[in-house]
Image (cartoon, rainbow, N blue to C red; front, top):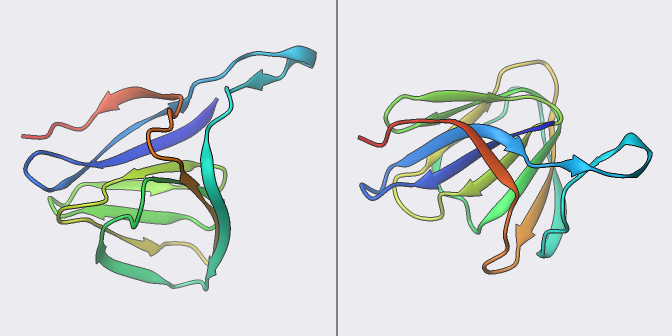
Length: 133
């Protein structure tokens, strides 16, 4: 399964996250597949080792696929989660107090930003949810 962390804005305008996976079903040749997801664009970005970004929200609803680098994300309530290469971030916190991140290993952060079409369904399956109270 592909690890995915969903990041969203709660009713109190703070960012929250829940860990899960991209839901996959058996396919041909023993592969596991997701359905197709409607996307608007894809772009790539690289941040040098030691990089960080202070409080911000996601500019649009998007998937962020980490290709290299290990990151520590933090919400305003002091909750943390870590992304590793191969992890997917479903960034839906497009309003509110936002989140921050910093690189925590010696690698650069190489990632793909996949901007979702409006209303696009993402096959995210939560494993556990962070409380919003």
